[in-house]
Image (cartoon, rainbow over all chains, first blue to last red):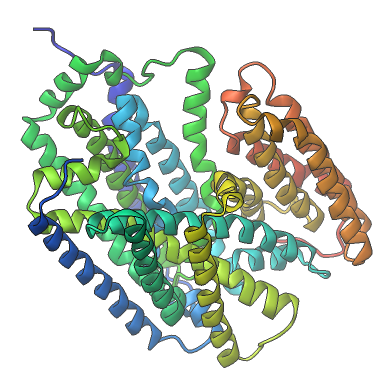
Length: 40
Length: 545
């Protein structure tokens, strides 16, 4: 039986992009967190 | 979908009624904390990160995320997912560029609405910017509200087992009465809190259902093999598109994100956030919600394509999978999530339309109802009036109004997104440039949309260039007669007309018809703002310091 695989572009679109984005968001929050004081 | 048995319908209906009572309870609680106009229109600038973050994202997505996005991957496979990076890039700009700058700016200027931000940023001595922005918002929002109420009516009638035209009418009225009542009672705070509840429901559904469905299918590899056996194109990022159709589709899907900074119902959430610390937390919450919801919807569509090969309409895949796979009580919760996605947007747009009338027109332009109590009452009455008009349009299905919905997202996005970004990041624009940007964004959106399908829109397309010209002349005449226009405003109108006509010519060039109208309209509006500002001077100093 024929085996099917995701193309490279499909890998990037389906999971590489969202995983990288989530990691980036957490890293940015971690690095930027202590520097910012609450300001109304 | 297969017909449901009566016990399932009863169980689903009971869950739906409970869901509606939760919305009413939230509205009632919010009403007890709403005492003034600023409370009603902006929750007294007191939102925390969760309500601001989830509310800003949930209200932007409408039924599109649980219906349209699911249908995209059901039909096109993995290549249907291009909307996800497009929307998430829009979220990134909104939460990392717009939110941290807009919150302090609107607090300093005392801005209540998006129109207020623009007019107070650049000054608006004769209400030219306020009237133009309010007109664009009202036209787009009223169409949106009516279309969403129609969608809510259909979803309610099908989930409550109501049949035929009567069922549809009852569905619209139930949804509209509840959401208008909640919005009218609690204003912005009720909308933000119900958005939080509904947004979490949507996220929960779009995380749990695809995970469970993939498990039932036999794992991720089984999903890949199932899709591949239907068509290998379903496993690629380009699908079966080539050439201009491919790049037009990809740029267009990525371009959806350009509209987010211009959505009044989204960015007012940032203005209502309590302080900078909450904005920082909001960034993480909004981005995680976005990733979960967009990719959850995408996977639901992919699983639906494999598990439900006979489903005629891919947009029904979430509801069909819910009824097929889980207990009726859980199916009821999942259907409530579908309706939640619609209602959270309806309430937000209802409030934006009401704020445009009550605050921007009556209070600011006409100078009425300056005290807090009258402002609150005026806001509540306006929500009810706008809600009733929305229901009447939805019931009578006025075609002209639904025609405007075609342009609602791109029209708002092109008219306001470049302007908001320029307002927050540069001092190179004045109020005449702002006027040119709004008119160019709206004009290019309409003409590009018509020009994309000159055969299907033959009548409208043939007339569109001179209608645009007449509109420009009419605006100039009204501005002249009312003595509202400064000489530089006339330059702004002429520049917008020229750019709009240029777009009518451009869209007919090779391959450009494949491009989503928001992309050219956004960049041409931004260019209009900068170019007109460069050749005119304003008596009001523009500064973001």
